[in-house]
Image (cartoon, rainbow, N blue to C red; front, side, top):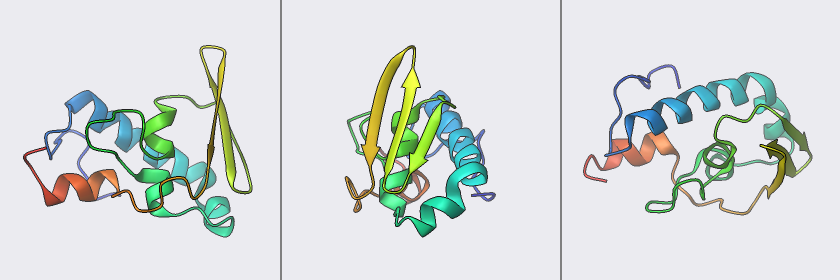
Amino acid sequence: MTQVDPCQPRGGIDPARWKRLHEQSLWWLGNYGEQAARDGWGTGDVFGLRVGYERRGGLIDQLENSRALVMEGGRASWRTYGVRFTYAAGAYPDLPAWWRLAARDDSL
């Protein structure tokens, strides 16, 4: 993750979204990475993107900038503007990680 430049978006990803994904990923890794690995969360579940479906990919894409996250086993829940969201590990295990998707195709 440290080799991904937050100021140089690739793959046609909007610069603001690219920066948000980068910052949210670093925050999440520092706070939940070890626990999530023990609980079976995969790369696609956490960092995956669905091309053409913004905020419908993995956990990081859906969190936006929320820091009100609770992870218990294979379930994550958070609140954004008073609305509660949940996400389960295994929902999208095959999604490409946002930085890999951008590295593969700079024309997205």
